[in-house]
Image (cartoon, rainbow, N blue to C red; front, side):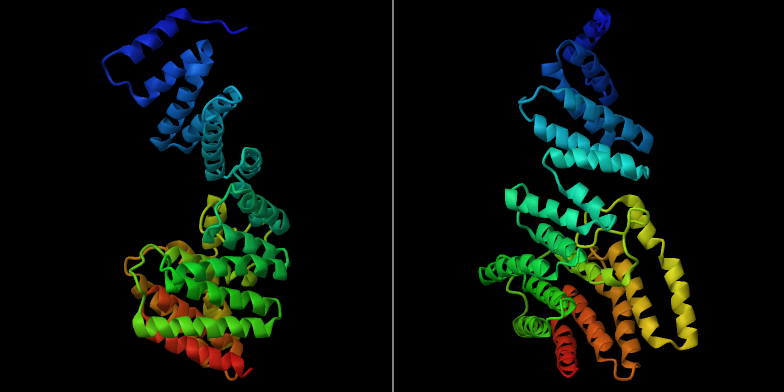
Length: 390
């Protein structure tokens, strides 16, 4: 039985009814007291106030305590109460983020599982992908998309296809990505999306078909991409599209997954296929590999081992994209050296058409992101010719 402190209740009501403006901490204190007396009226207010106060904080441990309390308060709300499900999802999402921010992965995963039960699958799908459980992650992605809980956006469909591919289900992955491509083609025809996005998607689809050993399908996708690039080089984008760098970043980073160590629960890797929801410690660990990769590249350069050097330098470029690939300021200036070096190194390899084709396509897609369409077309045309002659 809960003992009611009537003096505390009176003080809380006076605070809320007063003419002054209570601080966030004062509001939380008042709602804590009143939620014991009138839970139906004050538990929703307590959840909201706790989440607002958490956003104002700077101490990760305090943020975690506030998010955990918000989750408990949201769970206590009556079933069927207005906006209960939405408040519970917001509270659990804050709780999840705070746990992962402190590296509490097991606890964070448990909250992700509760979030999935509450109708938000993406965090658990990302955690599963980080641990290499791609089939389970793909099942969650499919459930979200097919149930209508998740819009068929490029982000959702790319993540689903990436997880299917990670599970080795290449044809199923291609079917999902083909559905995305068909939607993008329609949007392009209606001038509702950028030709650049269609180009990136076609190139990624060609990589998927190569991985599935479907050379004819890969070549067809590249030919279509070349046609789009020729249109871009001739006429440019019909409209000025902003904020699309994340499309390039996501697909370029995904293209590097095969070169990275396999993900496992003991050694999680980023959830390639999405640019959101990466666990902070996983992202940091991925970027923390940079000094070791730079040292490895220096040794390979000294030993004249060009094929391995090309591959390591690409892994370095992928991490540069993770770190700042979505930032438009000085985008071309920052990334040109990476992609120019990739092409220059591969040109020194005698007869390695596959690596040179890949380097030229990488630079071409980067140049599309930088809106340098004629050089992008030239690189891609050379790559297509090389890959057809293999």
